[in-house]
Amino acid sequence: MSSLNKDHTTKTILVLGANSDVAKEAIKLYCNAGNTVIAASRSINELQVFAEQQNLTDAVIIQYFDAAAFDTHRAFYDNLPFKPNIVVYAAGFLQQNEAAMLEWASTYQMMKVHYCGAVSILNIIVTDKQNTRLEKIIGLSSLSGVRGRKSNFIYGSTKAAFTQYLAGLRQYLFIRNISVHVIVAGYIRSKMTAGLNLPESLMLEPFLIAKAVVNTPKRFVIVPGLKWKMIYHTLRIMPERLVAKLP
Image (cartoon, rainbow, N blue to C red; front, side):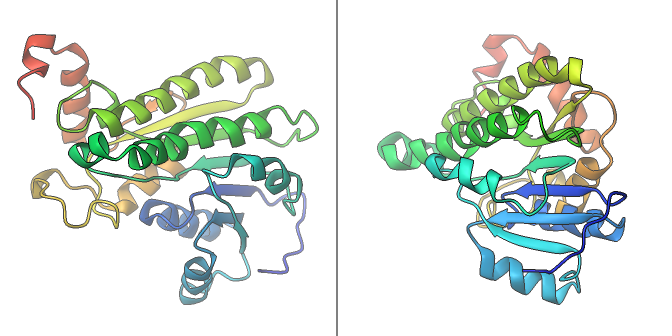
C-alpha cells in the first residue's frame, strides 16, 4: 500500500474490480492526470505487481474488495483512507450460457458480481452525505444487456439489471449534482473473453474502453467504438422476430 499525502486539489478515484484489463488501463490514465487511485479487488497481489511495473506505487492505494461479500462492504467503505470523488465499478465475472443454465453457482456469481454487489456498495457510497466531494459514478456494463439473446441471456440479464439500477441512480442523484454514467461495451480483448470464439473485426482494446471511462461526456449511455454504436442502436429498435434469429 502506498503512503500518500492527500491534498485538497487531488481527486480520489475509487476503482472497484480494479484487476480487470479495462480497470488497469483506466488506473494508468487517472494516475497520469495527477489523481490518487484506490484500486480495490480480491487480487491485491496482482495489483501490487501491476503498480510496481507501471511505476504507479506513489499514486495507487491497493485495498481488498470482494463484490460478492456483501456483509463486508460497509466496513470496506468506512475504512477507506480517503472518500472518493469518482467511483468506477468494473467488477466482472463470465460463465457461458449453457454452463450457467446447469450450474446455479455460476449464475448466482454473475448476479452477485454484476448487480447485487454493485447495488450493495454503491448504495453505501451514495448515502454517505458527509462525503461532499463525490461527483461521478461510472459503471461498466455490456451490450449483452440491451436485448435478450439466446446465446448469453443469463449474463446479459445481470448487465441489464445493472444498467437499469444506474439509470435510476442517475435520477436519484441529480439534485446533488452527482453524475452517473454507464459504459455499454461490446466485445473486449481481455482475460474474461480469452478463449472465446469472437469476431476479430469487432474486438475492442481495453485502452479504448478506459478512455471512455476517464473522459465521460455528459450523457448517461456511452458506447465506445463506431461499429458498436451502430449495433447498439440497431439492437434497440430491432423487432423481436429478428432478435429471435440472432445467435
